[in-house]
Amino acid sequence: MFYRLARGLLRLFWKLYFRWEVYGKENLPSAGGVLLAANHVSYLDPPLMGCAVDRPVYFMAKKELFDIPVLGWIIRRLGAFPVERGAADRKAIRKALEMLQSGRVVGIFPEGTRGDGRTLLKAQPGTVLLAVKAGVPIVPMAITGVERVLPPGRWFPRPVKIRIFIGEPIYIPADETGTSREVLEEYSRLLMERIDQLRSFQTAAVLGKSAVNV
Image (tube, rainbow, N blue to C red; front, side, top):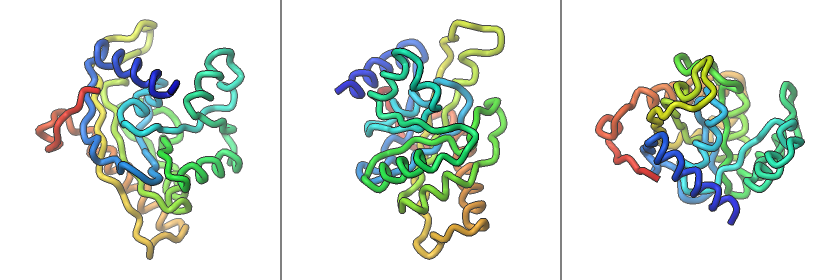
């Protein structure tokens, strides 16, 4: 209930203030575990990502955020789970794996950190490895425009147009579900190529699908 209420309010804000548009919502499978992977340039990316689809999206969040009054309570209610940054947090990885295997959608940023909004960073291999271990598809997503919301020296968000593009799922064939470096690097490159292609779409006509204002 809390998740749906929060998502509804945020969607209204995105629509009224940023005039946001979402393309390709139909590309997210309606059931089963899914790893939803997007480019990362802003603190707004997680809530934008979660509001762009109709299924609940669960995220890893910095452990420190859970200690902040009010914010910690909110992100817990939204289904986020803590991760120790800068280390291989096995507990967080196991939690993400359990969620995927139980049929949930887990949101992730393959680059591992925020970029400048112009050039995508190289994907960390952990994204593909997680999908392989869980046996789930990766759905690429591109968030555009958000890099201009809070440029350097500005404290109040600019009402720039935000567009989100959701691509077709990437299924890793059963005969390639090994965890060799070559397989991980190949699909990591493919994932970032798909995200980069989605970033270039600026209209529904280019994407070939209708925009959904949610």
